[in-house]
Length: 87
Image 1 (cartoon, rainbow, N blue to C red):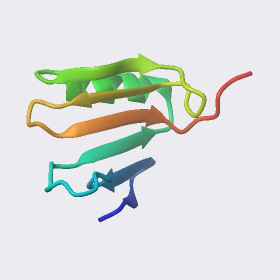
Image 2 (image 1 turned 45 degrees about the vertical axis):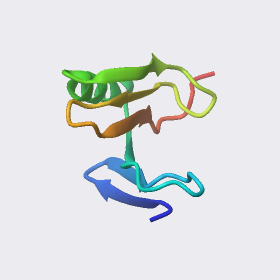
Image 3 (image 1 turned 180 degrees about the vertical axis):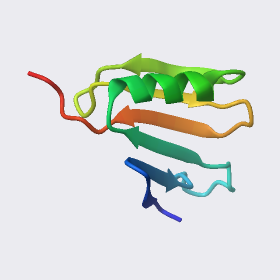
Image 4 (image 1 turned 30 degrees about the vertical axis):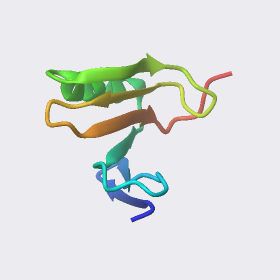
């Protein structure tokens, strides 16, 4: 699967099995986009509990809040906010 997107309630879930050429399957990462920074904070904290944060949540050019982590089960997550950046 190159990538897929689907909605759960008001949130968007995206998945990809990676793009490493010539390597075997090395798991997958999920991208979870929520409508508010408060929801991103809650989701990120819950997923990070017992896991490992690769990139703490921060403002990016595409999202007011974005962070990356691996949960306690070894699943990679990218959590972001879909709301536009405030000027």
